[in-house]
Amino acid sequence: MKVLIIGSGGREHAIARAAAKNPDVEKLYCAPGNAGIAALAECVPIGAMEFDKLAAFSKEHEIDLVIVGMDDPLAGGIVDVFEEAGIRVFGPRKNAAILEGSKAFSKDLMRKYNIPTAAYTNVHSAEEAYEVLEKSHFPIVLKADGLALGKGVLICETKEEAEAGVREIMEVKKFGDAGNTMVIEEFLTGREISVLSFVDGKTIRTMASAMDHKRAGDGDTGPNTGGMGNFSPSPFYTEEIDRFCRERIYQPTVDAMAAEGRPFVGVIFFGLILTEDGPKVLEYNARFGDPEAQVVLPRMKTDLIEVVEACIDGRLDEIELEFTDDAALCVVLASDGYPVKYEKGFPIEGLETFDGLEDEYVYHSGTKFDSEGRIVTNGGRVLAVTALAPTLQEARAKAYKATERIHFANKYMRHDIGHAIDEQ
Image 1 (tube, rainbow, N blue to C red):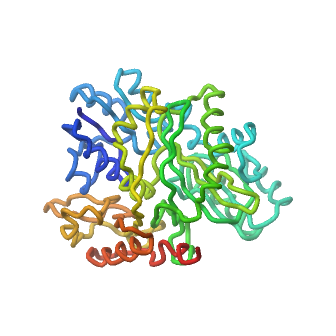
Image 2: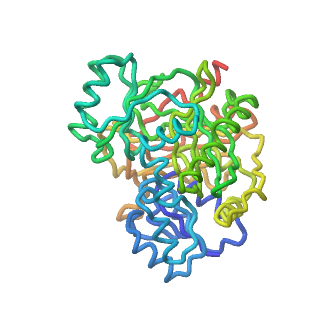
């Protein structure tokens, strides 16, 4: 079997590593990939948004299965293009990827089908937004409607902050067309939990829970990022919460999409918050999270390719997902200054110290080979160091110890990933 993975980050590295374990996979490709993925797959210099080139490559190389990792190509309709070309592909079609591609759509869906979420208003102009803020309570949350690399969410403590946020999103267009529409949302407090799931249009199978750390600085300070670290499982995700979410959130979301004529096949990421009134949905993503994939997939015992095939064929009900009892924790090593302004191109040392290890692994997010064949930094988030151990505390200690073996000029990381474990 020949498999093509589309994307270039740590999530795609985690997908590639899981896919490579299947004995039927004789050849892995990744477009465009990165320096770490190159150890597992042949990297192809085609961008994730170059749909026609990707489809032509898949035809020419007789690809049996395409796995789309990134949000932009999914929202742009890459699955539709591949299906029309007769290429087997895993991911939601464009009309289903809107679950992530438009926050306004997802909020309206939840309201229509009584799926628990924060109170909200969708606005389509800055003037309309300012009027809503006049009647709002603070703090409040502003969300750019479209995709914004995980950074289009602003938590505003005061009316003045919120007005500045409106200007940033809707007038200055910091996130481009993603800010043409905006969601103004009630601020909720509670533990945040991520739950990834496989979906075949009608059946859903949830993966192990995880907990992300979105803010750039220690103590959950600084701007939102794509994620500075993660761990799995979350000790706060109890059987009672799981039961509630299955009845009120997970299956109802799948059923709602089907009822809307948008059957979802792929991965739904449920971003949840545990409030005093019970679990509520903060956001949906239409693909694996990053860095959630880097802690969830290493714990998954069930073969990834087998699950993906079942989703495409509409027989996910035949699959039961299994996960190891080990905990996993990852720490993101970023370029200092991320997510605002940072330098790249610095050589990375120490990666060879992870060769052959199964309980410690480095997923590459922003790396490339330079003209001398060295692996250098090539992004804001550079690496995700993941460790597995019997307990979360042990996994955290092991992951942080492992980060000491990696060196590059402007290395930056949070030092409190997993801090919530101590508050349990």
